[in-house]
Image (cartoon, rainbow, N blue to C red; front, side):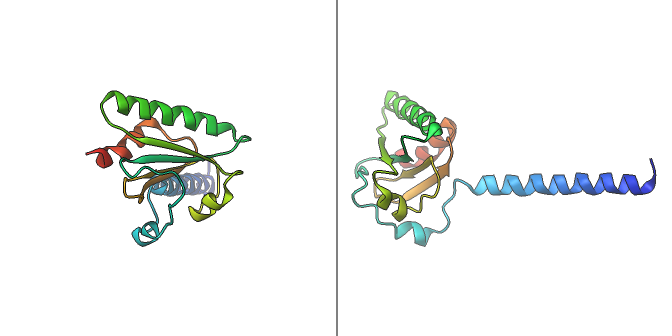
Length: 144
């Protein structure tokens, strides 16, 4: 192997490593809200959120395959927390039936899951099928 081939291999490995790091940074941010001011100004009226306890809201559609998996994960987390004496509301909104709610909350892809505190402020947001541990971690401070 000559020197130019070794340089090409090093460059390819460096590019892949940089891509991996950027991907990790993006995925770490996926559950964070963009800005507190934006979050405070969201109109959550009419979404069925609980004013007594945190609410897990997820957007779904009949044609969305992964949405069924989200439903199972959320139902399991809500049941587990209920067994521990904590109450969490669960609201499911069909994006096709209520596109206005999706627009107000800037939902661009399905499934999207948002956790709101009892005051109606969004505290966690993710797309795709969330991990049960991530939902529990986001809910813990809201249950204290």
